[in-house]
Image (cartoon, rainbow, N blue to C red; front, side):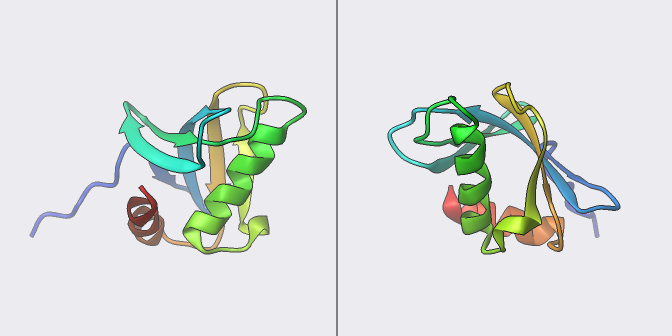
Length: 103
């Protein structure tokens, strides 16, 4: 029986699961979009000013995944639309299932 390969935007590490994300700030609604290459597209309503979009992204992901806010950490991309987010304490399969429900 073949194992299912996780999408290229998800990567399991010793610390947790890293999600590669392309953020679209100032969207009409917070929503998980379709994967775009090696990144998951996420739209947030906050503008990209004073880290508002970053904070909205982390809160929205925590809410979508059903985990505490402190389990979601922005690793890279503080000033870019291309971000890497680390999720602690949740297996990749659970993250994938919850993200696809939110999409």
